[in-house]
Each structure stands twice: as structure tokens, then as C-alpha cells.
Length: 611
Ligand code: AGP
Image (tube, rainbow, N blue to C red; front, side, top):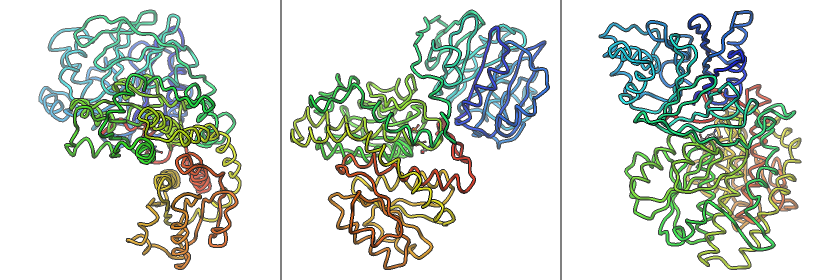
């Protein structure tokens, strides 16, 4: 939810931190701030994006070789200067940046106020740094020891990095439930919420584990567990390139990521699919194939776009394996006391691998004896590390807040899983199995074909950008695609949009239909085609505007529709990966035409790490 960057070493800390915060703004951009150690602690923070902080600090003396920075997505206290991070202790000796939530901060604050502490803002983070200060004073201990004691008392999720004016050569960091990566340089260390601010300096990183603390000097990294025992850091090599993080000539990350999909779908299948051999190789599934074969039930937990991928997976897995599948909003699953039996399988789907609702849902199922299988896009993420096994989607860093390439990569991987399990269970005819493997192999080039619709979609966006509402309708495998298209539009253009099963329209939503309502039908040729044709006629009869995504060469729908979008033919089980492309482009162009920041839409953040 928030972005953290910190540095200690021979470089000037401020430029490293500033550039890093810009790479993390997709995690939240309500306010930004830095603290630098240079003859004492100097803290600069303000409401607004990182660029506004940068303008404000132009010309200031920002020298210093140790610093911390933060870009915020507000959870406690509204976005303003006072609530911006970093926060300082009452004696101005300590500064902290924090990503996460301290659930019991109100109780701690009450105690601290009684002890004379005064607070400038309303955040839980400010309470935490005062709490550490108070423990330090009462116990006459080091900052490190005070942090350790404090973290045993706090309830919640956190990544914190602390500057201590009394020890200008040291950073202290700790993690529970939110992500923290440490980049290992030569005589320098970089800390960040993910690898994107680090990769241009070093590819050697340590993913800090929950309950671990790091004491970091320019040339020394000490990692300790909650029992204060030194741990050996597990250094990994990053496999992402800086270019993958830059915009690559596109106007926005979102458009770049939409156009990356032929490659990213190919990457998600690479080394895993050989249609000629009729083979699917999924390393993460290897030891669990038997568990899946015996499973009586699969539950999928996810949020947002990943939840839509779960809905498509429900249709695929039930179709190919005959195992009952339930798809649940992770946030609902977590709190409704679900029935989870030993041997049930939970598939947790998440691009960021840090979504708190999904993380806590899988943790609660794990406690009840379920097998947890993670589908994530970020190596080292909390959800991937909490899973018993899983498959990475390999879509590369997804910077745009609206998920696009991660969605199609999730569908590709889930399709592979359904095929693999169906084959192992012998619940799928060999002929269909081979046909679907071949179709899957053709998806990248069909997506390439669908991307050629970009200019056509821009024209459609121009025509409908001022509509107040949109309806998206689809049947079968295209129903989740309708939901996804509606989510894309609303989160990028702020236009109200709803996705519905097309048949459900007559049970209420059809009352919305009039000449001002654009209705997007995903009406490619499949088992439901004749039915959806009738739904289109029902809308036309009420003067609704019909935008129809149809299979190339369709002759029946064009005479009925106001606008036609022709996509390549594909098996209905494969089609969602292709049919979603024009809907992504439609949302993108409407958002741009309305003048919005499509990479960082208002109120949203890329990774929702609070429940
Ligand atoms: C999708 O465009 C949204 N950004 C959002 O719904 C997102 O899919 C959801 O927050 C889940 O994120 P995750 O896949 O990282 O868990």
C-alpha cells in the first residue's frame, strides 16, 4: 500500500531515495517524504506526489549518506503534510517510515499521552516511533533493543525503517506481513518495498522474512530473528531488467503492459507447454499432482482482477477435471467462518503477492489443514512464501495500477494447471487435451492480432467517453470477462460500469437500458452464441447502444450492433485471454481521453496491503 526506500553507503542518499520513490508511486501517492542524516536528522515531507516533494526541495542542502523515504496511501489520518511519513520521536532523534497497519495503536497512544508524549498527526506510525522512544528511555537500551521490544507489543502488519541520529552509520529495519527487499551493493545497501528501486544498482537482494530485523551499515548487514539470533541472509539474484520497469516508449505503463501481453503470455507458458509432445510441465505442481487428483473440492481466494481470473479458472477446472470449485472474495472468505476440510485445496491468486485480504484468507485456511497453492507474479512475495506450492506467472513487473498483463498470464497458468490435472485424472479426452494445448500455444499470436484493434478501439472510446454508465454482458467463460471489462473501465475512467451474466439482464439491469446506455457484449462464437444474440436484440429493442466483441467474420451481430470489435476465433476456454484485450484498450483510451492519470487512478493503489 505504501512505498518505502532507504539507503546507506558512499552515495548521496537523497537522489537514490527520490528516484526509488518515483518507481514505487504505484503503491500509493497521497503524500511523500524523506529523512536524511547530516549533522542530525532532517525531515522533509508533504502532501502530494513525489514530484511535488522534489520541486519543494530543489535548492535545499540534501547532503547525507543515510536516508529513508516514503510514498503513502492513507490508512490512518487523511492525506496531509502532518500525516506524511517520515515521522519522528518526540526528542527528534529517531525517524521512521512504515508500510502496514498497527491495529492496537489507539491503546498505545493513550498510554503515551499519559506519559507526556505529544503527537502532530493522526497516524499509527507516529505512535510507533514514540513508543520506541519511550521504551528506549524507560529501559535505557539501544534503539535496536527498543525496536525489538516494541514490535513484540504491537499488533498488525509492518515494514519499518528507522534512522537514529545517535547512530548515523546505521539503519534499522523490520518486517511482518508487508514486503521488504534489501539490495546488497559494494559498501552500500538499498532497502525498498520491492525490487524496482534497487535493480539499477544491484541484482543481489535479500527478501526479509516475517519477524526478522535488519541492522544495516554501509558495509555490513546483520539479520536477526525474533529471538535476537543472527540469521544468515539468503542472497538471491534478481531476474528483472531496468528496461522492464521503464515505459519503453509508451505514453503510460498501462498501455505498455497491454502491448506486452503476447510476450508475457508466451513467458508464462515458456518451458511449461509443449503441444507437439502433448506435455505440460509445472514444477510447482509436481509434488501436488496427487493432492489435486484426490481433492474433493478446490476453493479459489482472490481480489479484484485476480478474483475474475479465479472465476475463469472455476469454469476451466470444473470443465477439465470435474473437481468442484468455489471462487470466493478473499475478504469474505476470511470473515465468514468457512467450512474448510483437511485436504481441501485453496488456490490463492495474486499479482502483487501482497494483498492482505488474500494473505489472511489463505493463512486461515492453512490453519484448518488446507493445501495452499499460490499463483503469483512476484517472486519472494508474502503470498508465494506462505503457499505450500505454487506457480509464478512470470508477467514481469506490473506497474500500472490497473492489472492487465498479469490477468492474462494468470489465465494462461490456470489453463495449464487445469489441463495438467485433467490429464493426470484422465478426466479429459486425449483429443480435446491436445487441441487445447495447441490452442494455448497460439494465444500470443492471437493477442498480437487483437492488439491491432487499438486505433478502432480509440474511435469507440471517443464516441462513448461521456456516458454516465456502462453495462458489460457475457455468458459462460465470457461472463468473468464482462466483469473484468467493467472493472477496468471504472477504475481508470471513473465511469460507473457493471458486469453481468447476459441472461441476468432480464432480472433487473434491463431497466437501465435506454439510448444513453452503452452495453458492451462479449459475444464471440461459443455454446451460448444463440442466446446472447437474443440478449443483444433485447437491448436494441430498448434503444440501448450495443458495442459487441465478436469472432472475426461474424455475420449475425454486425447488423444489430452500433459498434463491432472483431477478435480472432478461439475455443471458449481459451477465448477470455483474447476477448479481454479490446476491453483493456477501451478502458485505457476512455481514461486518457477524459484526461485522467491512467497509471495512478485516484483513490487506488497497486497493492492493497491492508485488510
Ligand atoms: C485490478 O485492476 C485492481 N488493481 C485490483 O482489483 C487488483 O486486482 C486487486 O487489488 C488484487 O491485487 P493482487 O492481484 O495483487 O492480489
